[in-house]
Image: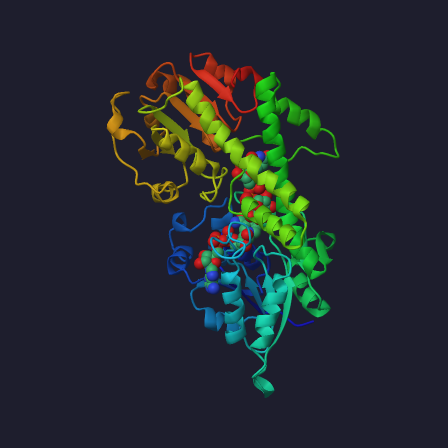
Length: 478
Ligand code: NAD
Ligand code: UGA
């Protein structure tokens, strides 16, 4: 088994950064280099002020303090760090293709392909190349082909050799460090036993043997997208039931508790919300849809596509419902949005339901005031495709402001003059709001919409605010 001294990770994003930090922390004898083409991102990773790290993850900054500059390094020097690595992890983005064959469904592998070419060019001797990015089945074949083709014209001792392994990442944002430190499983797929054992030796430093699973490479690639598809399917299932609860007088929290007590079903991922977001669920399911169609399995493709369609319908259902409750028009009305991240404890907004819902409300002419404890104003401007404005809200006749939005770091300021307040992310601080103070600032009749079921209904209704909660049949909505 080759001895591993140095590893290099290409891609310093939401996966590369935390994953390599935990490896460096748990394997002090290993040198871990994380490289990225994005100079700004690398600068942020190296920032002395830990508030400036490019991603927010509980527990991450203390690892950075322990390891950065000792055995964990962030740089833009791909050439030197690939050259000195025994193992190169590919952890780059794999978004859905925007144009060409498979557009809208297949993953765009151009960044992965580029990495393979960079490894082919810069590596020395024998290198184990590990797929950390989530990839369609058979991508390892593409990587191998690129690596091998690069050696065809090379002779003698300059010839390099490679093994390709699949080692998908199952961390969730917001709990990334805990997920990495105590994973349910580590999955390694590959053909060459020596290479598999070399990668296993890294994880063995802190993960119990029985949690390290070895499979063939295609099972490993497929297991990753299947896991995400199953998780997302549960969310679409419970959100579909939430709509039925609202129509029938049932309560989705109670239904989830009742079905989740069945060990065969289990209680996790049964939280009804504003629809799943995040960079991966939609992308990975669409990838599965594309693969299924590619292999002629149209029923399988349709089955999985329905999970994404339901999610889209559900997000839309929430925006429509807000308009309906506010007498069918929200034009010139101020609506306060609490939470823009796709879930709590992350500053990530990729595919956040808040984007779709806010766009719908702006389209209807609402004046939004958006609050989020971690997301930057500039990120929201990018996501909504619209600059924020500073305004003093003067009331319903202020039609010049229709379809605009402002940003606030204070929930209480955001609520001034608002007709409605909509919770879209389950940030802890929203569950401790002083509702009396909020109520005094809102224009009546005022509504509170809780799409995350984190608020206490009695506290809000008791002080004269109207209250709607996802999947609560007592809403009398629809
Ligand atoms: P990201 O966009 O945050 O980071 C990817 C990084 O790769 C970027 O900083 C980009 O500049 C860099 N990059 C791209 N091409 C490069 C190249 N040729 N050389 C050097 N750097 C390059 O993406 P992410 O969220 O970290 O996701 C990465 C992969 O991991 C995706 O396939 C994703 O599906 C998968 N994944 C993500 C999560 C998650 O929670 N975000 C969890 C599990 C798996
Ligand atoms: C998800 C998976 O949970 C990870 O295992 C996987 O590694 C990762 O995708 C990936 O491949 O990128 P993540 O997207 O970070 O992780 O977050 P989740 O906790 O899965 O939440 C995804 C979305 O579902 C969020 O919008 C969340 O609010 C929503 N959700 C989650 C619900 O609406 N209800 C729930 O019960 C759980």
